[in-house]
Length: 507
Ligand SMILES: [Zn+2]
Image (cartoon, rainbow, N blue to C red; front, side):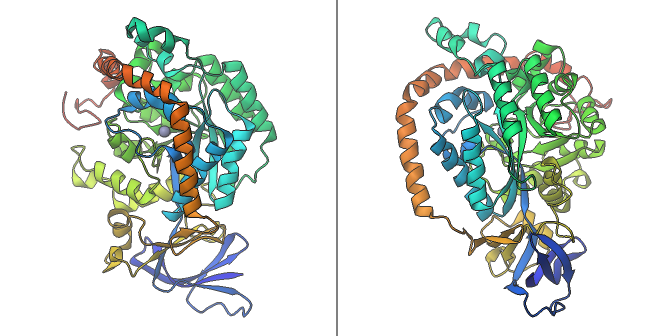
């Protein structure tokens, strides 16, 4: 038995939390009692005096392969990030996949997250070695995760209607010649993974992530769905993140991305839509009716200029919303406190009145219980309660973030930046102390990362030159698509008052 004693336990009932002892047996919280109430002399005591205890934050959308990519680009929209993807993530050996995931996992726990939904990409198709490399990184740190191979059977260039033809002669053949691993090969790899996955389902769960609907043929998406349903796996997809993809969906499929996925039988309680920025109320109602969830990534949406998701409207429709950071190639860190802050802030600039903004209680709920539901783990993580796993973060109240402690929930969302993270427990086991992940040699990890990026930069130099050469054309072409008439289709179901779901103004 472990007693986490004398901590101030975060509670929606009290602005400053409640002094309690949390009693843990094995990996589970078995009681929450008044300080000193446990009389078991053999119980191990973890002193939590002057600590605010919160449930571990749950990252609803990230990419472990981004662990080596923070700060690689600046003035990049999503299409420019996708254009750069072959050189950012190219040529990686198994050791690089493990290293990137390990760096991400260390950052997660040191910044107060205890679980994540990882859309992990391998080119040209997922491998058992690659997936095990990621799983072993998470096991080493102790992080809980859904690891979903991010798959596609079309390249970015094939996915944008007309883009290859619009490229200059000198670039067209190269872009047209790029290929993913092939639908059959990829589906077979997913089947093998699903058959062989042997990690404890409450720790490391397998998922499937068709990356973006336009990057997948319908047959391929249906193949992914069949494997997911046969093995009971969660699915997540990037949905309507930037304007150009939302517009091109109407152009190519004659319907929205959400409708396209629904037509493939993908939308259901096992499904979560990452981003879901450029989406109308019909699609929101569809997601709600099917019990699907949304992972809101405000930091990434700001960084890539994608837009701002209409979270209040999702909530009105009854859609469960969680919060994610997205990968470090597009948001540059794995700090869920920052992701919460962004989520709360962006809700206030959409033209809605203050009572419609996302409150700190709602934001904190999204980053814990909401994201836990996205992971399919909502019945055992995401809150401090009897029967839930002891995934806990102890924040040091003697840091400037809590001088003074006025309102714990407001300060968790508005003030906390992860600098107060002292200890983290996952399943009752201490994985962070003094703000540092236990068992990790940070200097060695930094040296390995520096060596890896140097080696990979040399390997990917040619791919980088190609991507940089066509960058202005890719950007211009996708911007043109976003301005296309198809955008009007997207807006056709906006409420009768004619107010845009995104900015609240009449168009
Ligand atoms: Zn993403």
